[in-house]
Image (cartoon, rainbow, N blue to C red; front, side, top):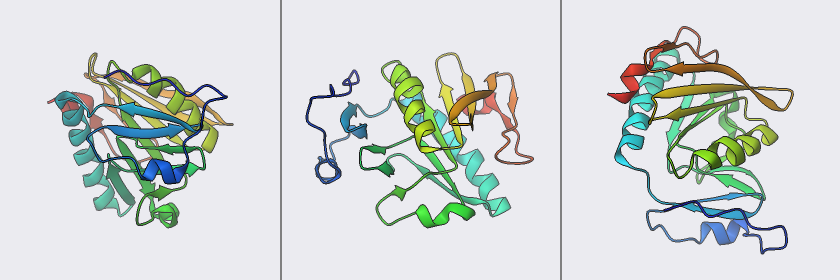
Length: 188
């Protein structure tokens, strides 16, 4: 299923109440600048990469008592027109007050997207711009097709590329001191 485009400026905007009333039908529903985006459930390789990264991060977070990690579907509410469901969301203990019963209501420390053919442009442009606009400090994109990871860090409201790595590399994220992620392990 291809991504639906953002609504034109004059089109009806979806409210948060309308969004919460959408069916739980296996699709992923997100809203950016009031426009509804619908994507199909992810493929197996996407889920495998996500689960492997989640295991690595969760192990480090618990060992270092750093914060909480959430996997999709989890809603990140960034404002009246932006509610997004990243693949992984990390919230430090310092920001734990944004963890609510139904969602993450505020800016997490890290969001991660696993790219797919149908969502790559959307993740690279629309989501990245939305996360930057709201001040999400770290944004990672993993691409299962070429087995790459791009890590971005927010600098004066704009994402700057902090690392561009392939599966033969070891990622040492600045957000998590002393963590080393052999990227080849993520695609096993």
